[in-house]
Image (cartoon, rainbow, N blue to C red; front, side, top):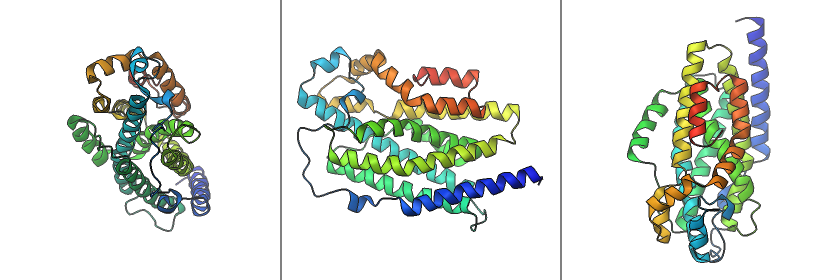
Length: 300
């Protein structure tokens, strides 16, 4: 190991130590932070109306106020269900990446702290969906089986890159939800918890990606970029299940056509992805192939 490598490792450990200290001083327990016994107000949205997939379309204008409220509650629970699904994948990838690494290192300890955070987040999301009496929404069977390969084989920059995609997009959404005056308090509070704790996870993921990118060649870089963009394509498409529209009496095919033509939605996704795309470009993970996929889900 060269002097440069040693210095890099030392800086990485210092960075992980700071994240670890932050997690010890600023973390939340959803079981006490959220008032689980409070009644659910009938007139509040599940997420900011502007973040509904149909907002800004003629179809949205056709809905009654109660239909809009119901739709946004099913949409937020679909996003949370997708979050649970991907957080379980992420936990497995992190654990495999840290397998038999030195437990005395702050990097190892923060990685396990992140896994513990993700467990709490998943339970929090699960309880919210249960509280709102919304069914579990899952990706398609094809996507579920495809993800088995990702969680079993992805490592290094691919594992942390795929996780970063999900975390960054959801982070921008939730920063709006936590400030939404007409959004359910249970969603606002959970969003605040997730935003604060995921900010450390995103910083950790970015540093891990940078570390792994220092030593890879051109072919691996292009391959990794492609896999991360495929993961992004799948995750973004899976966020809101087509089944949510049935809950308010809308034909899913008609709804999906409206979503595909929704320029407001596309603009929100580009804005939500701007920071992520900039980082991927700086890290060397934005190639012609990956850019094409990001454009297909309106991240660019």
